[in-house]
Structures are given as C-alpha cells and as structure tokens.
Amino acid sequence: MAMAEKQKKWVAAAGVAAFLLLSAAVGWFVGRPLVRFVSEPERFRAWVDAHGVWGRLAFVGMVILQVFVAVIPGEPLEIGAGYAFGAVEGTLLCVAGMTLGGLLVFGFVRRFGVRAVELFIPREKIESIRFLRASKRAALLTAIVFLLPGTPKDVLSYCAGLTSIRLPQWLLITSLCRVPSIVTSTLGGDALGAGQLIRALWIFAATICISLAGLALYRRLCRAKEETNHGNHSGS
Image 1 (cartoon, rainbow, N blue to C red):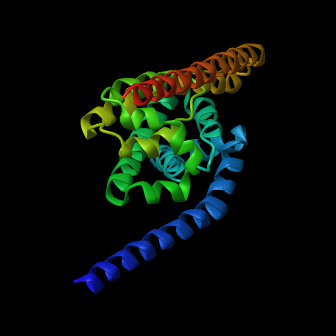
Image 2: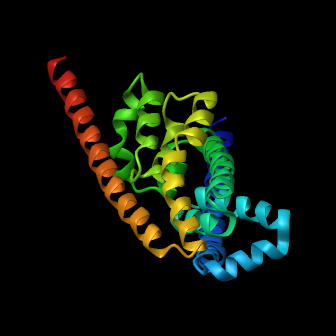
C-alpha cells in the first residue's frame, strides 16, 4: 500500500515537472514572439483583417495562453486588442480569453494544489495573500482586489484555487471584475489605432496613476489583514 502511494506521488511529480517544462518552452518559444507580434500594432491589425473570425479566435487563444503561462505580460495583448479591434470588441475578446484562462488555471490548482502553484509563483508571493486563504470572505476580498487596476491578478488567479472560493464565484470574479483594468488598456490601444496620440498619452498616464493607487491600496489591504490576523493569533 505504501509502495502504491509512493508511485502515485512520483507519477504526479513527473506530470507536474513535464507540465512545467512544457509551460517554460511555450513561454520562451511562443510567448516572446507573440508579445513582439502584438506589440507591432500595424502588423497585428493587418494580420487580424486578413484572417477575419479566425483571427479573433486566435487572439482569444493568445489571451488564454497568457493567463495560464503567467510570465507572459498581458498589457501588450490588451493594448493590441484595442488597436486592432476597437475598444468595445477588444475588451470583449480579452474578457472571453481571460475568463477561459482563469477557469483553466482554477481547475489546474484545485487538481494539483499548492505545490503546483509554487512552480509558477514564488513562495513569498503566495504568503503575501495568505489573508485571502484564511478569510471567510475570500470571494468578496478577491473581487475587490480584481476591480483595482495595478494589482497582481496573475498571482491571484493561481492562488484563488487555494481559497474557499467556489467555481461560480470565481467565474464572476475572473470575468466581470477584470473589466476596469482591461478597458483602460483597450481604450489606449483604440486611441493609438485612430491616430489620436494625445488622447492615448492621457489615457496611459491616467492608467499608470490609477494602477499605482490600486497597488498601494492592495498592499495596504494585505498589511491590514495580516496585522488583524496576527492580533487574533496573539490574543488567542
């Protein structure tokens, strides 16, 4: 019995290791060229126009890949979506891809647990959101953090599966609560696509300011919750 259990652990470890190597290869050989491609707006728009609906489906696949392989930055994709598709359609395509990617990550973490998360996310970052794992209001707190631009949503997407959040709750969070952050990028990309450089600069400047404020609020929330939990443990 002990031998069978050990074999299961070895098989699981080998599977995770193979998946990690595959993800690293995808990030290096696919993710980097993908980001470079999307970062060339004129070329990307021409490619989208030439492929019609298939170009849109391919873009959704790019976003799913970005969410799952968290080392690929998401901002170039969002800005490229605004440039190639316009603010409204670009936002909808980004939301579709991020929702599907978020569900994929959630299922992956629920299947393999914290050890799988540690392959992608450093231990200190996981510890920084420990208050979410301990909170009975994890869904509400996660929704609030996702609504704030500038917060580490890729980290939270992997860590959400470690919390008490239920799948229907996560579906709402990963779809609706990402919209404010996506819109700021797609609006900027749309302005660039229309040749409105001044408007684009204002949008990106405002986005940076809002993101810095959101990140500051997130860090303050983390500290406040950690201090509260520490006080509760000290008093018990």
